[in-house]
Image (cartoon, rainbow, N blue to C red; front, top):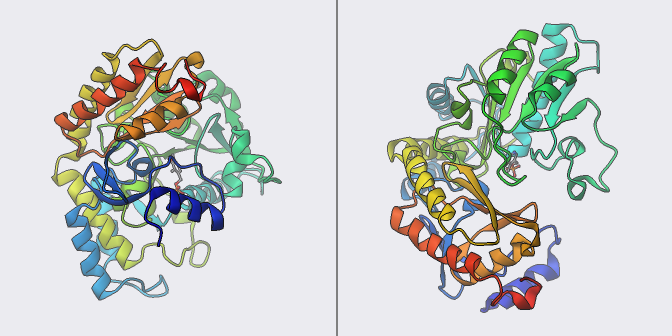
Length: 412
Ligand SMILES: *Cc1c(COP(=O)(O)O)cnc(C)c1O
């Protein structure tokens, strides 16, 4: 076994596909907001596995629920009933006010599921001609990695070389209500959109955008499908980001933190009859809704609510954002975000966010770049004020000092 980080890195890149470009940090342990590398060096995690560990690393109560269920029954398949699935449905329906629930595993699968269901719903309830259903999506979207989904991505790096793609999607600019309204046709069955575009660099829509979208969708009987895989479950300081907009989606997609980072669990929540179009055999997943997933997810939701993580995200998020703004370094263009879904956008001439993230890692803060000039900051929702101060101190030192030691890497 290799001992130094560099040995692990070399061995990974020898046998694995190179579909990621990780920072040079080799992690082996996590607890709350902290993670440790193989040398025992501690870092404050400001990525939270893209918001999969909102509840903090290795939350003991989720761990306990998962271990208890793992001793009893892990998977039965949906060919049989289990004593856990109904409990999961009940908890989810009550917490989110959902009418029907469909469990899957990854966020991507839940998005695919929603796409299938809104299409079928369109054909069955709206008399749309066969194979003519249209779904409107937004430029700079991120909804996952399947062929269908990357087919309507506007990021060449995510779609180049993977065609041919599925038809039936129209792309409009995010946050532009007039463009959305103009794209609606009699065959539009759904609008699939993120409440805040995370991967695109934490893009927040203008005030009132979603209220107008909601009204038009209701008027035209278009299903409003909100992908809350990243924004949901407390990340923005509300249980769901749609609450900031004062709206309720017809279909809400959850994933990531639904298991507190222990296990891939996702779900499609419907407030209308979109999920009732499915009949036995028309959709499924071997692992979807298995007892281990259900027990883990229920514990993850319970601690999120009972331990006040959503309120904490709001309070610490506001504090963190103000502290970032007060750094006022010359390379900073804007600080934006909601709750603990935060981003610092750098000026284009700052040399790119990646080098700043590398320097942050050397100082003990793990964050990742998005869209070249954006540093995303989304720590676990259990972060305390002193920990936020600890992070901001280091972020400030890196942002205020772009010439050294970054100069050697083409900055400044
Ligand atoms: C991460 C993400 C997905 C995909 O989830 P996976 O679990 O990686 O498949 C979909 N939508 C949004 C908004 C995401 O952030």
